[in-house]
Image (cartoon, rainbow, N blue to C red; front, top):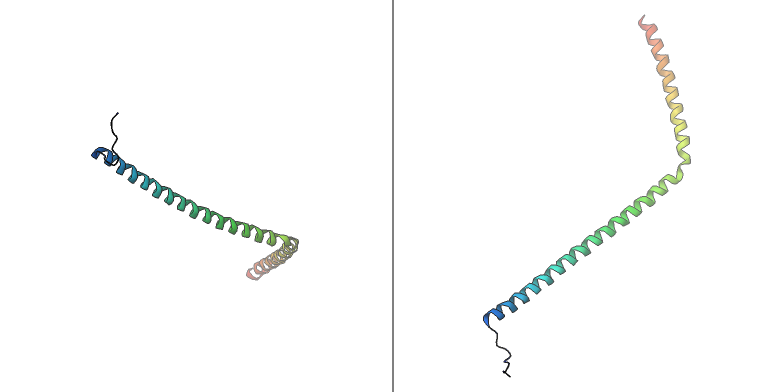
Length: 99
């Protein structure tokens, strides 16, 4: 049997080890960067979901008073009808004045 000497590497083996160490370090940094981006994106999504939830809550509160819409529509119709009467009257009077 031959003796195995520990601690002696050829230049090729040493280069391969350094390549593996550097490659591992690059992989670790890449994973850390991607996880950081993921955390930031998830936080942004959570904030926007909260804003949407708040907006929907406000919309529900705003539409809870829909009974007033009919009253308002009736009042607007009455104002428009009165305005049309005035318009027709003034149109007839103006025609008589010009003739």
